[in-house]
Image 1 (cartoon, one colour):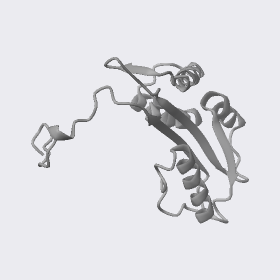
Image 2 (cartoon, one colour):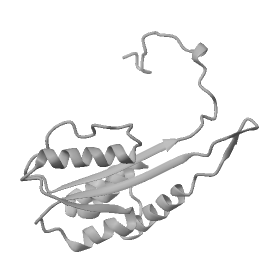
Image 3 (tube, helix red, strand yellow):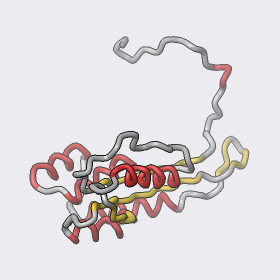
Image 4 (spheres, helix red, strand yellow):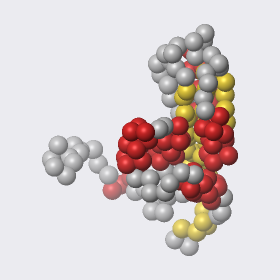
Length: 169
């Protein structure tokens, strides 16, 4: 879902062959704007999924799911207002005007702080390299999920051994 949201936000700003390729790669079956309305409805529904659950007759804490989007936009860059206006209501994407050219390292740190905040400090260095001063837009999508496993992990059922994919590699 997270990857689909990121692709949908990118798709919304694309045109022509790029938009067609994104649609094909992501298997988007709905036309615009219905696609973005559907992602909005799905995101809102998922955000309500915090009810307690029962696993094997035992009550467990409810799942905590946090989905967040953001757009870090270069100050002074002209974007189609329709695009930016679509990101906010359909993807709840916060807009941050930043200066990639004057302070790419500071912007990188701001982006990493945003990601760390959204993931309960689980991801602290999402962008390890300095951003290019020519950067115009960084779209972010984060997912944080904390929930009980339906089947508890059994450490005794594991062992250290080589792992082989189905084709033997």
